Each structure stands twice: as C-alpha cells, then as structure tokens.
Image (cartoon, rainbow, N blue to C red; front, side):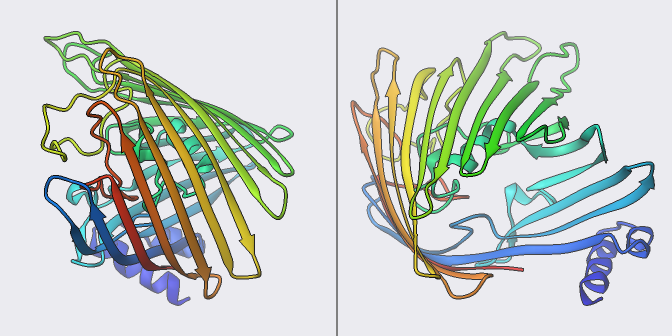
Length: 358
C-alpha cells in the first residue's frame, strides 16, 4: 500500500493521472541507487579521484504497470528516470524519463511498445558481458553501445515475440522524424535468442542511418553474437561483433583524452569478448573479462581491455563491490575506461562502492 501511495504522489507531481491504474492495483515502483569512489589514471589530465553515481548501473527510480483488458490482452507502461544521487541532478542530459519511457499492449501475440526504449543489440551486449555493461569492466568501453541515447532509441516501436520453446525475438524501428527525408536519422534493431537450461545464445543487430536532408553519409551497422553457459561453479561468457560504417562503433570519450592528435572512431572493426562469473559461498562473486578491439581501418588502432572484479552481497538488495580495468591502446587508439554512465578519462580505473535496489 505504501508503494501505491508513493507512486501516486510522484506521478501526480509530474502531471500523470495514476488513479485508474492504481485502482486496478497495477502500478509498481522500483529503483536502484549506486554510489562509489572512482580513481582514473592514464589520461592527459592526470589522476582523477571522485565520488560518483551509477557505476554498476545508472541510479534510477521507475514506475511500471499493467491493466487487464480482457481476452488475454493487457495494456502496459514503463517510466524510468535516471539521476545522479551524488548531486541530485537528473541523468540522460536532464530528461525526466530519460532511461525508458514507453506504453504498449501485450497478449498471446507478444508485446508491442512505443516510446524511448533499449536497442535489441544493446540488450544482447548487456546479457553477455560479465560486468553487465557497468563498473570499470564495462564492455561498452570498447564495444559499440548502440542507439542515439547511449543504448536507447527514441521514437521507437518495438515488437517482442512470445517464448516459443526457449526461442524469443524482437524487432524495433526508430523514426528519424526528419522533414523531407523519412529515412534520415532512422534506426532499426533486431535480435533473436535461445535459452535452454544453462545455455543462453543471442544474436543482435543495429542499423543507424546517418543521413540528413542535405547530406548522405550512409548507415552504420553493428552485429553481435553472444553466449553464456552456466556450469554451476563458473559461468562462461563469449561474444563476437562486427561493425561497419559511420557510427557503427562510436567513441564514448570524444574530447581527445590523451592529448595526442585528432581522434577518429573506427568505421570497420571486429570485437571479441571472453569472460567468467564465479560465485563462491552464498555472498561472493568474482568477475573477469578480456576484450579485443580489432580496427580494420588503415589506422589499425587496436585495443585490449582486461577487467577484474569482486562483489559481496550483504543481502538480496545490497551489494558492495571493487572493480578494476585497464586498456592497452595501440597506434594512438583513444579508448578509455569508464563505467555504466561515464566515459572515463584514462586507460585505467578503480571502482569501490555500494549498490542498493528496491
């Protein structure tokens, strides 16, 4: 009941009429708060030590709900707001519901949703990365974090199939909304997956049209195949990605972090990831991964990332963690060690912090 009252108060404060949904007892409030110490090194600016928010995953508060429409069909919505709990500022550039914001219908046919949503390719990357695209070991330090909003697509219609014996799929299209050119700035994503016991295999694709009304610069395309296999004592992670075209592998840090020469994102590359998750005891988890970026352009700016981590579960909802990652850049490659919501400033970083979910 407390969750319903709080949800109603917050939704009312932003002008959303929540009473009909609450009358159906269908609204859930949830969230994550993450704060920790980050120590970065290797960049032109020198060591950076800071208290920051959202290291493992962006701090957030969210509201989701469903309404039974009868005949096996339901209406659904999700509103998720990111924030920096070290400063109180909104995340995602100040967007109120910048993490996710969609409404849709679900039933035996699957689900259809419309709004700001994660790209299918990003969901594959997040599922296969031992660090869950967070902490210093974030796979997105080297591998493409597709979308126009760091893993998200605006103005998107997405269809997700039901589960057919372990097989699922989704298709998403993001309208570019460019006057005079319906294809310009549009995006398309798709994924198919198979899960059966300890095995989980997923294939994701993302295409981004870079055209404007006056220029034609083509499409960036990213394809990622990932798999995990849980042996019990250890869970293995592996992925291979191919990226072609402008914005197929955009840089997270675009401000020339090493102060060398003008930086250029690769337009032709391949990525390889291997990793492990090792739980021990009832509260401890060890994480490790290795990622290789193979730049196939004439610059040949390859990079390798090594990451180690430890997480201690104080309860089902509260974790303590310590993480480290280092990137070895070659031929002037500009990659940096960031975390879930930060691009980083150098080629090495430590994280130590606490995460609480509710």
